[in-house]
Length: 262
Image (cartoon, rainbow, N blue to C red):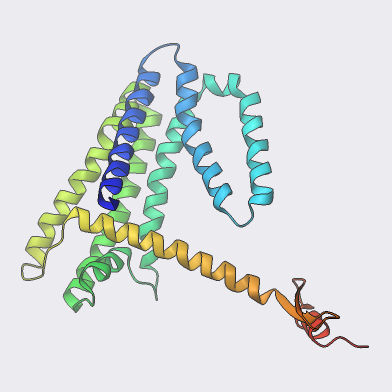
């Protein structure tokens, strides 16, 4: 059942992406479709922001802030619709730069490259040759997404908007697939004796990494919650949690709460 549910979610995600690409290109290529274009530019980031705010531990103030921002966008919808192409461009470039940052930041000294993390999840410990290769592939993916963002920017500035939309909506994602195919071919040449894994293995590893990251954040939040409170006995002798204020006086407040003076 879980496999079927996962397949259904993946199929739904593919359908949603394809529908978005088609509608966004239609809005750019068809005169008078400013409303549709603005919806394609704003609905994805607004929905992602809402989901992030709802899942955050600070949802109490993030959700009202999201509502305020959504109301401001709605109030400015008429002038924004006139230039909706900018929204589509910023959305496309920010996605690719975000992916470049996701890969590139793991190349810093003392960190494990992202592709090395995926390989470790699939194969366990890595040989020096595999570790070196996965670092190089992490660099390649970083450069790839920076290149996509650069080409998108140059085309948006220099060619007709329909040509840019064709690249952004119909060519960018197939190029990602081509990158996977090229990486697989390079792996067969660079590591002919290593056990091979496919794209599905990489996707499972990425999902596992994301799930572990969310679990780690939840554990940190729970640990912080426990650290930010102490207990003191009430008149019946029962332990009652006492919140501790943040700041330099935390230890002094905890001491006073745990050892009240008569």
